[in-house]
Image 1 (cartoon, rainbow, N blue to C red):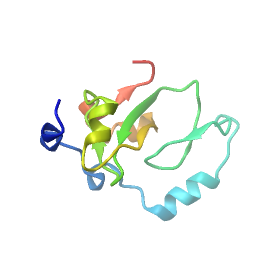
Image 2 (tube, rainbow, N blue to C red):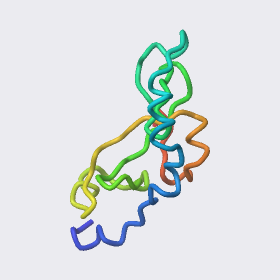
Image 3 (tube, rainbow, N blue to C red):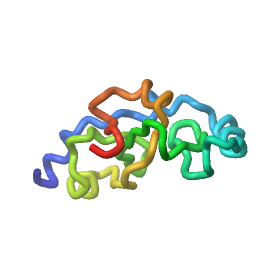
Image 4 (cartoon, rainbow, N blue to C red):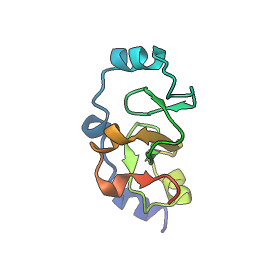
Length: 107
């Protein structure tokens, strides 16, 4: 895919999937449980993630929008919105994200 073709990529706007207010994310980040193992946090809600639980991954742009999973890292890097890489999402938050914008862990 050429650099010109990167403008044809349809990103999922953060206003569609990022629905947890910042203040609630901070509260969620402060919560600890015996299940969380303080491993990592969901990019959508800030809750700690259990590494043995079902996780999804999303490919995030610098503006907070999501790339479709079929877009390579190289193409995303060349896109005008840039590439922050892949971030984990918990199963509950993944329900808000269309299938073409999330990847199951291990796929």
